[in-house]
Image 1 (cartoon, rainbow, N blue to C red):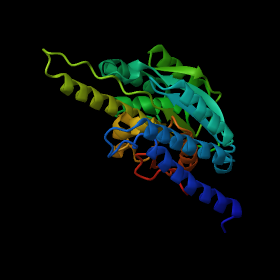
Image 2 (cartoon, helix red, strand yellow):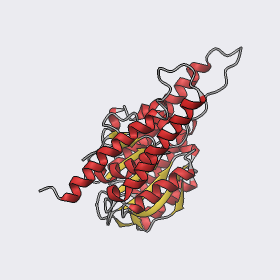
Image 3 (cartoon, rainbow, N blue to C red):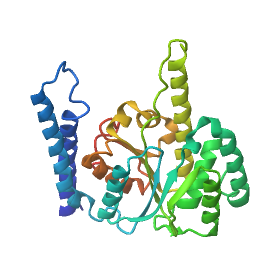
Image 4 (tube, helix red, strand yellow):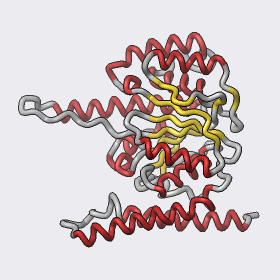
Length: 310
């Protein structure tokens, strides 16, 4: 039987989805079909976006209450992640009753294609020493590394479990290799992992003598996408749920938008619009769904809709 609260929350979620449309109308999609927006239309768009975020903030207590009660979340940030966005997401997790058990930063070296030899060698050593039973010996380089990170900070147990000496040894090894940094080392491993994306790398400036700049940029982007996809796929194997979140722009034209289309990440939830209150609320709703293995792609460019309505 559907309770009154469940009915109310579903209704509010529908209105939140409408609010996303308002935000989009006043934000990244507002200029579609327009030639030269006037100061008046720009101001109107700003007011519309502000209204959408204001509605999301007002609806958040009803939508998020107890969604993550008795559940723990570990936060992993990618290079370039906006700290204000990270802090806002952490606050929404706590508003939903979730416990933040650890915070870790992926360092640039882990995502650099020219550091693959280091990642492969270190990953192989750590696997042999600490995780031979959990990690397949023939796992691809970055999937193996993601799996090792998962063994260290995550668990498939919905209640979470203790992070023992092995977790600390793995994290020490990753930190020693300049790949992952523990910002807040956790005493418990979490079932949910929130990965906060950063800005896409800036493309190299074009030169008069080098006609291969665009090709090199595309190849570098593809290599970076493959690295992130491998890491997330490996991380997901050791967690009950993983969510990758990023900005509205990243979801439309950036790395988030590209990797969320990869079949290897079908079990990884993605959310764009994390710089908005709407996106932050959506992230927590999506995390709650991910706990039972239900993934989806949400946000302005999400294939599964603006927000999870279930």
